[in-house]
Length: 173
Image (cartoon, rainbow, N blue to C red):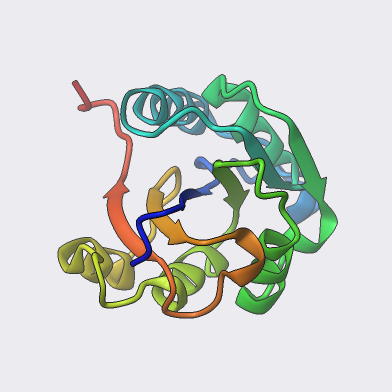
């Protein structure tokens, strides 16, 4: 990978949501467990990832609440296209991000988060054990961290290195 300029991409699946009767899928809120685990995700991000400069977030209630509960305070763009997005749509939205954003957080849904992770991870520098865990399951609140050489516009399949995969739970130190 080109070490001249490395960006960081962080893919966060929304935290555990509830299923209230009569509430449309887009409007489902976080469950109590999700509220706790979104905060743990924020703690892990602050401890393990460079400062997040920008956020792309689905407009779904559970993704917006996940972002809020992480305590990440970076400029956010709420994008309707990320709700139910295909991997191609998510990568297109990332390609539009300004290169002034060195660390980008995307808050979205399954199966898009695992699909995009598997598509982006190249062979150079990727943690293969983490990649195998993603292919098995991408649980709620899970976080995948990638390094991306070059610029956001050039992000394409196989061009990023998966460096970490973490699932925040109450047993975290």
